[in-house]
Image (cartoon, rainbow over all chains, first blue to last red; front, side):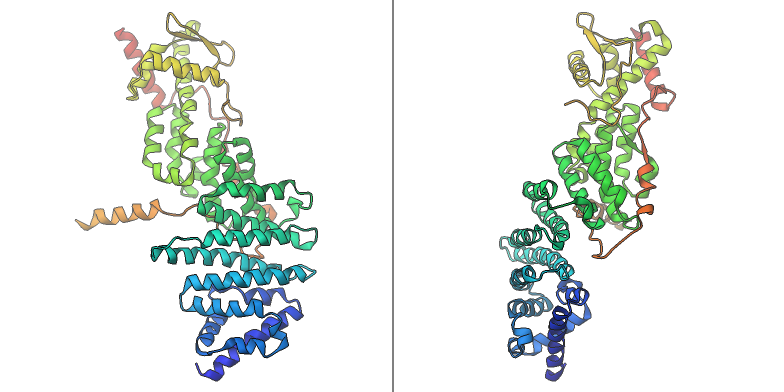
Length: 410
Length: 73
């Protein structure tokens, strides 16, 4: 590339930039910030900046550009560094661009530049992640993603007003969620959620569908962490119902967290669902619940322990043991009922011990009594103990209440 | 023969670190039809599975086990 060609490309970019602002052309404007998109136009601009020694001189030589120097100077520096794979420097400069952009954005009355804001918000997160990888590989402390979170909070504050810009607030929120989940600081989600869900300025239904789906996915996952299963079921089911049917990866991700929630409230996924979305790690768990097979449940948890732990659902799945115990005792009761209907409601604890022994689970009568006591307390079984004779006497009416979409009593 | 197990462990490794559950971005102006959303996927659940049927293999084995134990006592 010649020096003249480099000059031409930089000038072309600057003209597009100022024209987009003067004509409020949001589509063109957003494309000028999309570093991580690796668009040929921006890549060639990066090459031009590498060749042209002083692009800042071009910015300052015209009033059309110089009034936006606070955005453009660091943006050029970011583009140049990104092209040279200096990701830390690219991020640092882009953060300056983002801060300058938000100052300008506040002054624009309409929301014409909202899509450019989305691009900046997305890229600052992506660049921060890349910069942190670079820092970590050089043995330094990765801190840029945390910094990006602080910048995005400023963006959120700007959008949390009364005008047409407020529809952008949920997109920023979702990017913040991605940052907080990645950093393991999910407690920071609370203040943003409070703003979205309690502030009168926001009407959830007016947000774009893609943002509502993403928001419900992340807040649903938070409800899973808090073991608030009815709320988790509502939010993740909303995300599932409204997700783009073409986006199979996202549907799979929603299901990965919704399935444990559904299991916890006594609802099973069909095998066809597990097969279609390659979630077969749940098939043995479903089978264990159907059968009352405690050994199978424990094996399934052990086999996929890493995966379940990483997704944050291991503890939820582990608590399904009580439902499996309930199912096993219910089967013992039904088998007894077929043989001797008159005495079926009296189940000897010794019989449960034997059933567990057959499943290679060693428990003595006292331990089984403990489990049965918990089942009764949690309303998974109705009955009482005849303690001396080591028998549980089951209610003649509905001895094994169904969950009916409600969580086990805590 | 020595290469086969290696291929298997590589597969497992890829599978194990498949993702960190980060939701994929939808395109900024991505729209989709309300009518085609989630219809099929929301019908893939069973809430009335906990029946009194004990004719499956597991239940029959359990029954045999309990009866054989009863006979021994």
